[in-house]
Structure formats: C-alpha cells, structure tokens
Amino acid sequence: MTISIQAMVDNSSAAWEGWNGLGYEARSQILGRWAEELAPDVRAMVAFQCRNANEHVAETLLMPGPTGETNELYCAGRGSFIVTADVETSLVAVVGQIAAALVTGNTVFVCLPSDYMLSAGELAAQLEKSGCARGVVTAIDSDQLADLVSHPAIAGVAYAGKLSTSQALARQLAARDGLLAQLISETDCESLSVIGSPTYSLRFVTERTRTINITAVGGNATLLELGSGEEH
Image (cartoon, rainbow, N blue to C red; front, side, top):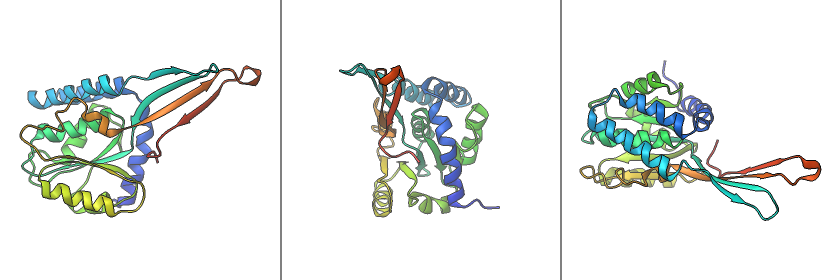
C-alpha cells in the first residue's frame, strides 16, 4: 500500500520534535553507530559533519539580561529536509548531506535514483537500526520527489549533482506556497566544496532564544522561547 505524501510529511513532522530534542551528543552517538557500518572514507565524512556541528552549532550561548533574566541563544533543526542526488554522485557526498541534516536536529526524506549504489531504503534501515526513531529518516521514490518538494511543510532540499537539476529545484521551491524553503546545493561533486565546508551544518539550523525571568513577582520564574517559525 502506497503511503500518501501528506501521511509521510505528518509522520516526519511527528518524529521531528523528539529527534530535535535529543541534543547534539545523543544524535552524534547514533550517527557514529551508523558510520561503523560504512566504508572508511564515508565513515570519515560522518565524523567530519558531527565534529563541525559540535563546534559551530551545538553550544548554547548565555547572555545575562540587565534586569536579572537569563537569555540563552541556541540552534535547532528547521524541520524536514529532502536529501537527493544524481546517480553519479558519490556516496560520501550523499552521506555527508544526511549526516549534516540529522546531527543538527532535522528529519530527512532520502530520494536516490533506482540504480544508485545504495538504495534510500537501505540507508533508512541502517539509520533505524543504529537508533533513529521511525519517521526520522524516510525513503521515498523518485516519482514522489516533485510532490514532496512542493509541499509547504518541507524546510529545505539538500541536493548534490548537476547544475541544471539544482536550478530546476530552485525554481520549484520558489514557486510553491507557504514558508520559504532553502536549497542547499552541491554541484562540485569532485572536491565537495560545499559539503566539505566546516560550516556546512549552519545551513540546516535556525536560531532560537530562551529567556528565563527569575525576577518575576512572587519569585516565580517565567519562560519565553522564540524561534524563527520553521517548526511545524
């Protein structure tokens, strides 16, 4: 039985809050277990993405307020991302996209060509076996990709491959309704200048602030938390 696009989006959105709430250390541990099943060069890419995310986006910054409240600035996942690539794209690139999206707290739809070296279903099964809850990683068929890209709940698309396909995805995202979605495109699939950047993980996060007011009347603490609106 074929699951509808809306049902897949609902399942991914339901899994997002728990996955995003795990924190970087727990997510990195799960991805580390997944990497143990991969070839050395691919395993190194997972470690690279986890290490850079820990350095650039995992830290919560404390900003004391003038009236005694505590202000915290931190990063969170944006929501559900699509990871897709051409058949000629290396597994190192595809895994780099998946690892960066997951370690930063996003859920992922994986769409790969039918003749790719490893199927999207196999990757999803590996990640579930390593500790990802159901719905965190979802394999989709190529004929479902266009409808999913156009769905307003998708936070962005990470693509590695030809420039022409990247441009087509950009036009499709620009034409859809709802929140603006980000295209994270890698067209230099030899040197991986985008995926291989130490700050690649910053493309998958949104900033949030959390304020704890310890000076409220009666001594009761109040909490105010603001995000950028990508969460569903």
